[in-house]
Length: 314
Image (tube, rainbow, N blue to C red):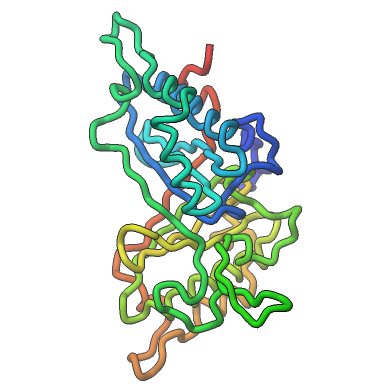
């Protein structure tokens, strides 16, 4: 019988910067996550990674507490496609970052600097990426009540003590899990981030969100110490497309998620067999909630120097 080995330790994303972990924003404590992807040209794969890491580290130091950026690579997928995960405190933070172009000389130097040698044609970062490949997806932590799908009290509304008033607060994904602080995995400290997306059938948009949250909560309970799962909504993009960030210690721990290590919790199994859809809507389980063939997984590994035989900084 094949034995599953102990996960091999690889550098995690917060090690990409010298900013203390306690001061970094990540998938658990941020109000907005912007996933920016870009396809590098093969001839500039090393230079492109250096540029991507330098830009991220500048933001991490210059805008500590406002934004934190980690660079990820596709574990399995398209070679040389980079993923920046830009974690913001709120949309207000994004407006602050917009001022970089005209007010931040350090940022302007990184972006405008001639990075390619003349014998290779010279040029800055724009030559490193395939034209039209830079894309962004804006994600916000899911909370009940978003987009008119309130089936429970909205997570983002709180009662202010001593006042007869309710106020809106920016929800973070950490509120979705009851895992102990010392077991929580996030985009800052996980070894593998699996990004799962699914498009909900509009008829079952409320039921689908209930299932998606229940599934995340069930996995968080049964896989504590191995995985932490958060649910996000797409702020600007396809309506009712939801996103799970499944943080694992390493790619080896994917076996836990599959249930091959006898970690299948009865309560978690019940989530998959429950009839979530009412009889008035025809009845059925979670499989009716999603547009066919819309569930997709993308595995991401924190970038570290030397990955895929690329050159690191001089």
